[in-house]
Every structure is written in structure tokens, then in C-alpha cells.
Image (cartoon, helix red, strand yellow):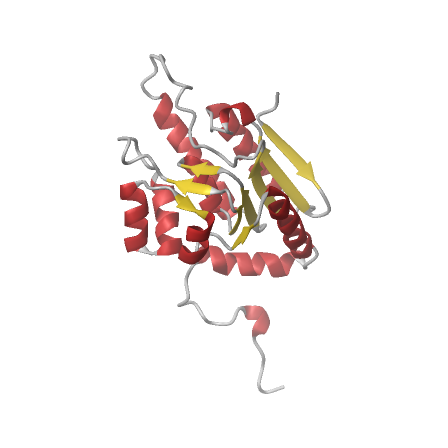
Length: 233
């Protein structure tokens, strides 16, 4: 069984984490597959929007802790953290807008993937958590940094250090969820409506907005060259 599925519609590529029996927990193979698909999407002129979601009613329960159980390789977990960081970087560096559609659990690195997307839509049963610190595990810096960007340092500190679970409603109020939907069907319908509309926009316009949104800076307000004019004419 493929651990990652890709479904392309007109202008929209949907990537589905496909380990439903393990609540789509992230393994090395799944992360590598995701990194490869994101590279292929980056080079595609036909994809204007990317959706990331999970199979079986769960987005992603985080890293698969059983992958290295009993392993004699002390560097396995560290390599997986590097892969998580690489995938987050690829999501953030894509020219195309990215949307996470979250049902069920989005824990640890799974929530990190959703945070890396430009937009997150969540069903009412969605649950968000960063359990690494309470469990004595390493929380990738890329996840912490993105959380700070979205909710601010104080709120991010509480989320990361305490490790509580948060609802979709909490996400809407704090700013990491754009909209809460009633159930999985409503989530799918809303995500399709929004991404199809986005995919109908001119690609260059999408890319220009993305460059500013991803940079997150408001101090570079000089109009780009294409908005210049010559007052002598």
C-alpha cells in the first residue's frame, strides 16, 4: 500500500497521508515520499494549489514512535527530525498556496505539517497537540518557529511547554485555523470550493501574494518594479 496518495484535479494537487491503520503517523518512508512529491509539484506548471490531508478520518498523529523501537541505530530519530524539517521547508518554499484539511488528530510533527501550510481548515472533531516536551522528546525548531509566527511567543510557549490538546475552535480564536467546519464532509466540500476558486486565479498573482505572506515582513513596502511609472511621460 502506498503511504502517500496524490490526486490531481484542475489546478489542485491533493496529497493524502495514507497510513490510516496507524493514524497516518509519520515514518521515514512517508516523509521521503512527501518530500519527493512536493519537489515534483514545485516543478509543475499545472498545479496552482496544494491540499494536504489524511486518510481514515485522521490528519496525522505525529511521528511513528515504533519505527525505531529495538533499533541499534542511534541516529535514526535524528534523521527523521531532519526529514520533518526538510518537508516543512519545502511546504513553506512552494510557489503554490498550500491548504491543510484537518480531521481528527494533528499531533506533534503532524501539526507541524499543518502549521507549515498557508491555510488550515478543520472539522469540529479536530484536535491539535504538541506532546514532545512533556514526553521528553525533541520538538523540531521549524515547528516552534512557525507556531511563534502564527500565535506569538507567549501563546506559543504555553502550547509547546504545557502540551495540552486544543480544539478547532481554539485554533480559530488563536489564529492557526482559518475556519471550523461541522464535520469531515463539510470540511472536504469547503476545501474543494476554496481551492478550486484559488486555482482559477492567475498563477503569477498567486505567487506574488505568496512571496509576501511567506516572508512575513511588513517593512518592505516599496512597490515592485512593475508598479513604477515615469512622471515625465
